[in-house]
Image (cartoon, rainbow, N blue to C red; front, top):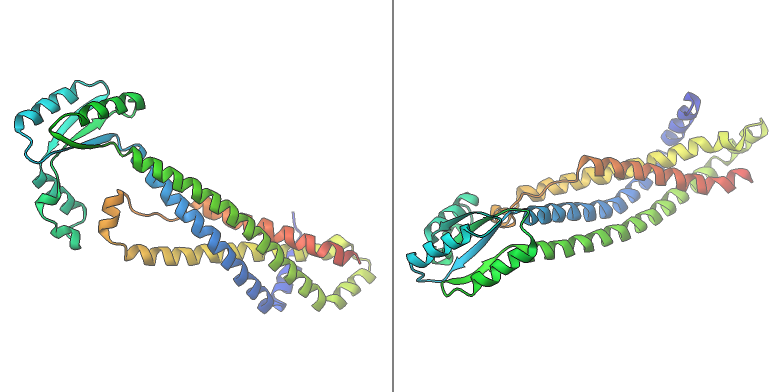
Length: 293
């Protein structure tokens, strides 16, 4: 654990060089904003992927003019399929009304005509249904003359999965960039701090201070810089996120099926901890040789 004197010396040093440390924190915040933005995108893409992956339903879109006898026969056949829990017929008018409720009657999409919404049979599919059985059912249903198309939402899930993988790769690359930025910014700051405190360091060494005694406050200062930079980035991201979310069209949220969410608290705390760790590591690496000289 750190002694009170070490913490006091670190606090006194930061207050003395507050302009230099503030500039360093600002530079680190810019780097962490990029990483946080990538993680924010990945978080929401992953939530959308889970939402569609566990939708538990399929939509059978009917052709115009499909007779009621064909609809009833198709519903009865679908209900007899294993893993299918229910099959509910939705007319064009019902689909139009449901869409209007989802978007709260706002925006241009609320004025779409009834003809823009095809009649369908909404199938409640058990999550345990094997993919092969689902694909076989879809193939057979598509062959019926009264059916225009069948949507199982698996294509959405696959596309979102690819986007998530790309986002994770981008976040990993940005993490490397952030690591390099922390090393450069904190390292440069600590070298400038040591130059300004060269006389103080020399006096401490003359009176018998160990290298560790001199280094510890500087390492704390680097850790605080990293943590403050990450915290500032999260605060800025939160401000921008809620500003954009307040202006997000309700139609987009209705189409996606969920509202965008901010970073989980575990990720936010992890970013702050990562900033502190990287800042302390960069400070230690920078001052190790300089203090030993």
